[in-house]
Image (cartoon, rainbow, N blue to C red):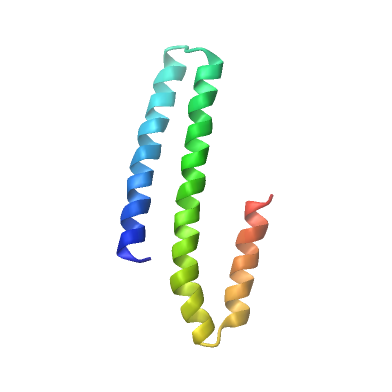
Length: 88
């Protein structure tokens, strides 16, 4: 993973962790369910953005070098596995 991607992902993880802690406090404080759900939706979107950052970095680095190195089948299999997991 390139440094800029790593830093962006770590920043996003800090945001997600803070949001999760906030949701934990909301649950402990018995906050109104729709307000809690709004926060969980925001967390889900943040995770999806983080996943997109990781995938984009992977495509530009590992996948590209794997294809250049003649490992097309392996690279495609990994991507297909990720696709299947994401769509379960």
